[in-house]
Image (tube, rainbow, N blue to C red; front, side, top):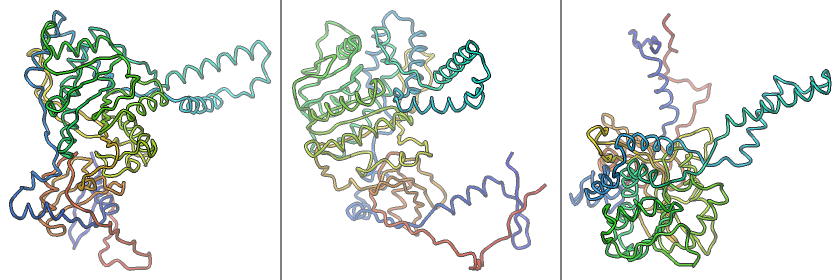
Length: 483
């Protein structure tokens, strides 16, 4: 239970929890005044009741996504004779494993860990002792020391290995991951469609396509314009299952989509694609060099937009931002810009502070696939990290709008938004109707994590610190802890 403090105010004694005082102190210390002006066109539409605040152009829909009935029925059908309980149990285990994954450790990371371990061992097993031992004893002691070093290194180094998908594993992946990956891709690609209404891709390529969730969404959004779907996955069984899903689980049924191709490797020819996707694949690459080679190969094939999606863990967020920064530095011939989620092309502010382990991620709600009455829940959430890169210049006047990077805190007469700004900074803004106007306050109040605010932020006005000699008329006696 939190301890209490005694505050003397105008002759009255007040009891306040320690946690409340600490949070108030932090708020006063790090909150600053900042102006916020709604974009003139949006403001005019709101004043004329053309749009309501909850439908302002920075809102990203949908917030809750369900698999289309045809896909749900197909996924239930492909389970076949496999025991449903075993498939569900294995799919849950696979999901946990994927969410806990790390990329392969680099040689430098391993070397640094080994150096720290040697320092620990030296404190317990000093090398000075060798001078007091006979040659045989010294050899045994050295072996024991090396074994202890290697043991600790194995315990502290992530044992990465690529996931191999056979026929059964592909089915488990489809049952456990289809609903949430579909929801993530639907959210990301819908944002692209809303932000660039003129974009009508004619060709699509997905590296690490898996069961084809990206293709399902792309075919829903741009079915009339896409004439070629090129899916690349190293697992032959995954490709076969993806094609079977397009056939609605019936091997002899004709595929409704036109020109769907499956390969286990990227095409060697320099073909251009309007929409390039690499989703939930970066963890499967053996090292940074392989990641960069594949990313650059895909970027060279891109003639429109490239989508990068990973798990919304710290490691997933780091991989997405590593890929984004690498591609933005690819050179003038392959110059590009970030469309989303960042309103800038600078380093992600989440990763600038090494002490802050908060990932740059977003949340989507989805309806899980129900195979039986024992399936749990009608609503789940998934965290994801992503980047949408445009080959060339982004022609979107709303690109500088700040994005909400954590849930909006709606309070009485004010709302608190944590924003990523066009200057590459994280900024917390406390919106009130009196300070920022009714329009800005209303937009902030109804916006959610992942939405953008159609406003321009001013320069933060940080209150200068008072000198020690300056009297403080509002000062209060220091709180004393109750015994």
